[in-house]
Image (cartoon, rainbow over all chains, first blue to last red; front, side, top):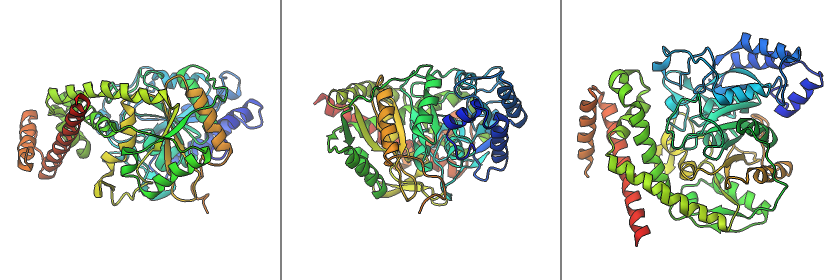
Length: 440
Length: 52
């Protein structure tokens, strides 16, 4: 059921009383409790079943009534501690109310199943967590799921839930979506509320949905943003972004962009020579602002951090203010240049990650010909876009090999038209989710 | 800056925060500081290009 049907089909079947919400939710709970991929950190079995029974009694309704979902463990859930993937938060006070986005998804009738693994404090692209374990890629458990919302992507890819929520500061939705072969979205900055979401770098933080189909993704995004999208299938001018976005791309990433552009019948190339500096500004901002956020806690409880996260935060906290100031000023300059691209194009395409999922044991990817930590570098292409604040869909290429995703970038206001394009490409078999084990 | 300068910065950071870090952690902080300064240099160069 929830492992094969889309969220929209499930909601429809429940509404028609062809299946009960309780049966759907019980199956999701059982799958989550026996999760072999370390995607879930907590399962709210009794609460979820009770909510499903309320759906079946007609006490809860909405466009997603009875559909199971789960959330990255940095969203407040009333009565639960928001760990943000950190051992040092296990003793924190429980949240008194749901994060606004959790409230909205529940108000649409969906049933919360549990919380999902992540890099500690969302600082990483790997979901290698010293306290809660490493999330394994359902397509190949010897490989990384990506991060920091790795549990959110893996839970959807594995079929445990059809929908999940993550956060994306530098690429934390887009990277795991790419490696796990599911749909994800980084909404435009400010389009989805952040209240009740544990912060990382507030200037860049966004909340994003995951799903196994573009139509499910659209519906969940509409619930999160509180608005129905319209696109009217308007024609869009599409270009690929080259240069920085091709420099470190593995053959599968290059091929993914080629395949999509060939299907679209386009050969336009957009130029953004400032992309490397844009990525650098994001890297510096994240380190400095993330370090500043954690400075007081580092002084008192440094030993309780995941060492790999702590060491990066310490370095960031030590950056001179002048360096951060320059990064912030460059962000403003970069945004202006980036928006000028929309004079010529409506949609820009890049790989979402420089390669498909790397082996966990290796923990590195090739950057400029040298092995570099995957934790810090899987998001190089995503990070270069985050600064601009524009909406981006992470779309899985339909492929026989390991999954790889594309960044489909547009300007705020064109989300509906972008989703229309995604639906057409999914219907044509160019983009789309392939279940683990469902390959040739 | 030379690699040993980042090692000294890393030691200074630990002292400033009142931390006793392992040799591996000191090396990781030093490597991250070096990386951050490389990124700062890229931003600096980009500003120069923009002004040119």
